Image (cartoon, rainbow, N blue to C red; front, top):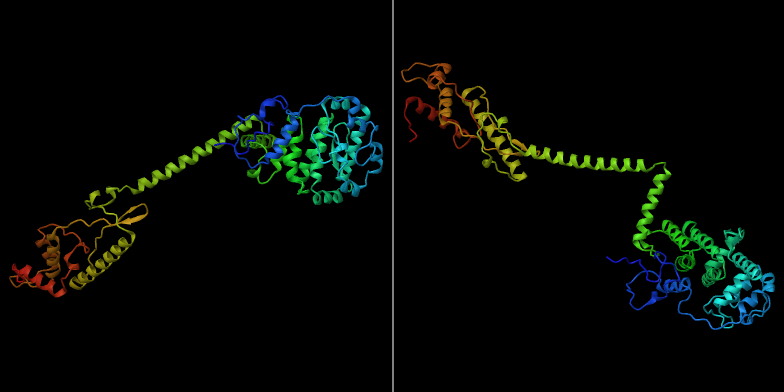
Length: 463
């Protein structure tokens, strides 16, 4: 997947230095859509590379109009103002500085034309001569301070270029917010400083605007120009990279930051996390221990999940040893829907109760009931079919109940316990399974009495 934040006009993250690759704009360059301002990126790249497609005409010293202006030898045009007069009379005259648009091309000349067609563009020879002139350099710094004051900023260190808010910053920031054409002026100032030997002034001013727009949340109208233009006017690549990193760390939301490739943004995030760890007093050993501890925790979590799955599987297995007097085959177990299982359980309970009542009426005593206990599968009840019983047991049980009230064949009355022993041939009868006994079917109490008498007489009259 292509990185949508890679810009062909931004060499900030290239290995080669700016200005050494004039063939950068070849038609063979691959292009893909990007949310970044391509016009701004191309403009700033052209500036940083020293205008590779621009050729200077022969320029004699007396034709160096910009140098002559800064040496106070010729006035600006069309305002017809000398530099010394301008620095004295226009200083703090904020209304005139805002209203007039023809002076900025003289104060901060470039190798590219501006809106004042009467101003002259810089040439390479003029730039070299300007850098050698102390008077011109001194006046340029004064012009810079004048314009900073107009924007509510103060130069506090002429050696490093450090700046901070001026006392009237609130009023001047308001003017910046209202008049966005000043963004173009600031871009020109930054470019000119880089051309005329004050490139170390660029980064402090850009850092000031980044802090104001991204951290202090002021100058919202300037924010986009700071990121599209100001930031990429810095000629020092290392300082420019640091400023991009500062911008990314303070920009929100992060996914909308388009002024460096995504892979560079990932590097910023990793470096930030490492710095936070180091800031907390953790060294390399601590980092390794922390990573190992995280791996251990992840392994423990995986083992816990596996053990839970094992427990669940073991619960689903049926242990036949826990089912006394039952002969069950796994193939006979049927999983039924929950609703059906509930209905079966209710019907089993009713059959048990009915069988118990019939036995109590016939015998006058309580006969122990034997019901099969369902096993548990995954916390749910499964119905296990009842085991078949010997019908002889039922017959013997009925005889046992009927002998107390029915006379024997020889006319004598036989006790219940004795009859039981004789009819079972010395075998102890098993308790009745009311769920599977025919007593729970269509037989009634009267039928049971007839059935019992016939069994005693040895004849079956119901046939």
